[in-house]
Each structure stands twice: as structure tokens, then as C-alpha cells.
Length: 58
Image 1 (cartoon, one colour):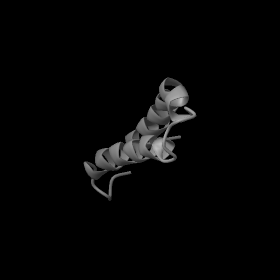
Image 2 (image 1 turned 90 degrees about the vertical axis):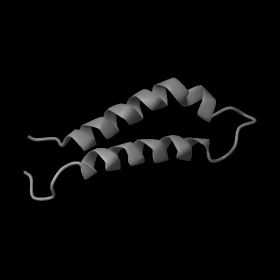
Image 3 (image 1 turned 135 degrees about the vertical axis):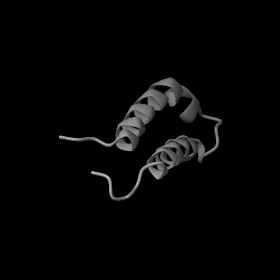
Image 4 (image 1 turned 180 degrees about the vertical axis):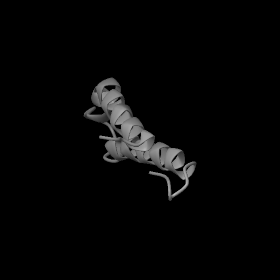
């Protein structure tokens, strides 16, 4: 089974970011959009990685 680099990066980044920032995201006085910022950063990084590859590659 082949996993693309962007998917593998996205999964690893989400896992590591969640572990490192779980307390920051769930702080009582924090803004409601904090978890969404973390997810947006991971999605943007995966999109940038996948742009480098030709669409016809297997």
C-alpha cells in the first residue's frame, strides 16, 4: 500500500501538534478558534507539499 508524502506528513503533524498543544487549545480563557488554527496550519502544510508533485504521478 502506497501512502503519499503529503498524507503521511498530515497524519504525523496532526498527531504531534495535538500532543504538544492539547493544554493550550483547551485552556479555559482561550479563544474558541484555537483548535481550528492548528488544523488549518497542518492542512496548509500538506497542500504545499502536494503542490510539488505532478498530478499524473502514481
